[in-house]
Every structure is written in C-alpha cells, then in structure tokens.
Image (cartoon, rainbow, N blue to C red; front, top):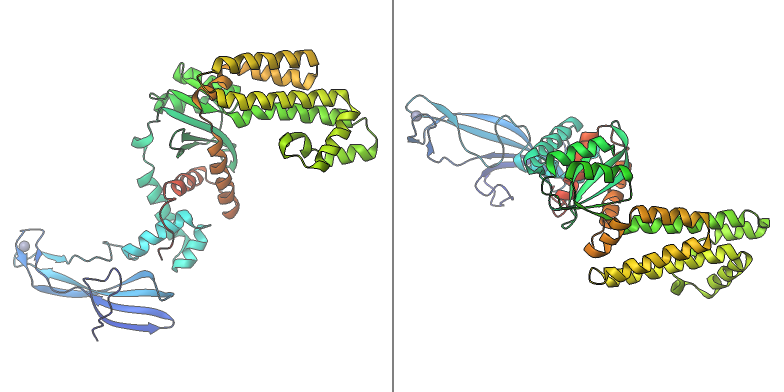
Amino acid sequence: MNTNIILPGFEEVTVTKMESVDGRLCIHAEMPLKPHKCPACHTLTKKTHDYRIQKIKHLKIFERLTLLFYKKRRYGCPCGKRFAEKNPFVKRYQRLSMELNQAVKIRSIKGKTFKETAEVYGTSSSTVVRRFDLLAKETLNEASKELPKVIAMDEYKGDTKEGKYQLIIANGITKEPIDILPNRYKNTIKQYLRKYGAKVEVVIMDMSQSFKAAVKQALGKPVIVADRFHFVRYIYWALDGVRRRVQSSWHDYDRKKCKRMRHIFYKKSSHLTEENKWYLERYLGMSPELRKAYELKEQFCLWFNEAKQNGEKNIHQTKEALYALYEAIDQAGIPEFQKAAQTLKNWQIEILNSFSYNYSNGFLEGINNLTKVMKRNAFGFRSFLRFRAKILLTHKFKRLGSHIG
Ligand SMILES: [Zn+2]
C-alpha cells in the first residue's frame, strides 16, 4: 500500500509498507525514479540496474524500535558504470540511519552513561562510544584552541587515571569552558600556556603559588586576578581556627553547642535571627579573643563590600582600607589572622586587580558542580580524554535539545 502519512525525514520517500513485527515497526521504503548524473561520464540516466534491500536501524517511532527496509536502487549508465541512488536517510556503509546517528551522538553527550544511551536506541554501548569519540574528534580540534584574551582557571577533583585533580580553563568573558588539563602541575600548565596562550592578557585564578608561577613563566606579565571567592575564604578560615582553638578549653556543653552553632559566626550580621544574635553574644562574651576575631572578620566584610563599590575608579581607597585592615590585624595579635593577612599581602596585587577588573571565576564553580554530577552518574570516568570530551561537549551542546529521539 501507499501511505499518505508523511513521516518526518521521509518527505521525498515512497513508503510502500508499514507493519509491526514482534513489537517493532518495520518501514519499507524506496526512492522515486529520478534522473541521476553518472559519476563516471556525467550524463543523466534513469535506467535502473538492480535493487538491494538494506536493513537500517532508525529512530523510534510511536515509541517502537523502528527498522527501515530500504529498497536501494542502483542505476546503470550506458557507459557501463553502476552506482547507487542518492537518499536522505543513510550514508554509505552505515547501519544506523542519519537521524538515529545524530540522536545517538547527542544522547551520548547528554545521557548519563553510554550504556543507557545504547539501551534507549536499541544499539550497543560500543556503537555509542564510537559515535561519541568521533564527535569529540570532529568538534574539539586543535586548531580552535588558541586562548582568548581573558581566561579563568580552576582545579577540580576528577579522579581519572591521569591524576586526582584536573585543571579547567575557561573563557573569562563568555564563561565557556575551553579545555581541561590532565593535572594541575606547574609544568603541565606552563607547556599548555606556552603553546596556546600568545593572546592571553588577563588570567583569573585561585591563590595557588604554582599556578601563578606557571602563568608568569609562560606568559610574561599578564594581569593576574585573584578570584574573590578564594581569598575571602582565608579570613573565614582564620575565624574558624580561632573559634575551634578557643572553644576547646570550654565546658563540654558550650563547646558542642558552639560547634553546632558555628554558622552564626559567618552569616552576614544583617541576616542573623534574634536567637542567632543571642548565641553569638553569648560565645563572644566568653572570649575577648573570639570577639576580636569576629570584629576583624566584620571589618574585612565591610572592606570587601566597599571595594566592590569602589571599583577601579577608587582603587586607591580600597588599598588604603586594606592597609588599615592589616594594621588592625597586627594590633590584635591573633596568630590565625596574622597568617591570613600574610597570604593577602602575598596576593595583594592580584586581589586589588579583582576589584579593578571586576572578573571572577565563580562561574567555574557551577561548571565543576555539573562535572561532579556527570562523574557520579557515569560511576567515574577512568579515561581522562573521554571525561574531558564529555565535559567540553556537554557545555558546547548545552543549548541543543535532547528531545530528539
Ligand atoms: Zn556513465
């Protein structure tokens, strides 16, 4: 029978029969006779030489696995050349239709595991992996790797064969991930930046001495911007250190309660509830040193908020207020804060840059969280290259729907 239902992708195709066999949908189809140009002598011919039935796996239709029985025509040119007709659904030597191939590729990126993708499309894991690797090769090529003017870098725990920590490099302006390095060693970073970093002017990073050294040695004098999230932590760690040291000499009840309530020390003071305030006052009242530490943290937060508002224009004021903060820390003589101040001093240029340039790599946190989800879903990736491809492709294809198929 000839059906007058036109299936998507089958617009120019003659469907001669549709049947359900063992729960599978079988579509028998052929192409209409049409003059084809002979690849050998370039004359047009309409003479059918013979037909071959090609069995092709296709996208699910009506939730059924679908097989296409394509009656493929070969034309025979008077010059003696025989050649296959053009068709919209399958490439030479393929057993999956083009649409299924495309869907498998997209799902191989977006799906949880290759195995799950294989099950959805009724194919094998190795087929899915092959499609994925091919796509990675086509999409993530060397030529497009020249780094942009502003890059951000951060480490994350990937646990692949190549090492525990990997380094992600992203575009600091568009926030798109660019590459992932197998480890965070100085030499790895240096070599990479030497190769691709000729245009880099600004680097946003967390406060790692080896990152800084690698960037300086590879790129000369780029502007280095310390990530805000990372340097703020040093002050919070200092306060936490003081709290733990001080409470250790307290009575059991207060020690445990204070530990449980520790979040009240870090909360913005404007966000504290009445109960929070009561406890805060109680613990600060038990130790003048803890009270001083808390005040220093508050002074730091005040400085930080003003620095954001000052921006580049009033960077001088930000710098003066930072000196005042060092001074206050010096006078307080609390070892945890003195240590934190030393770190801030070591990174002072990079910290001030973060307010002059208003860049941060906070967005990498989001990317790294997504990476963790992928790692968990796939029960860990042993191959670094495949994991790298999965992360980069996921972000590249983010806007592409996964509804296909
Ligand atoms: Zn010919």
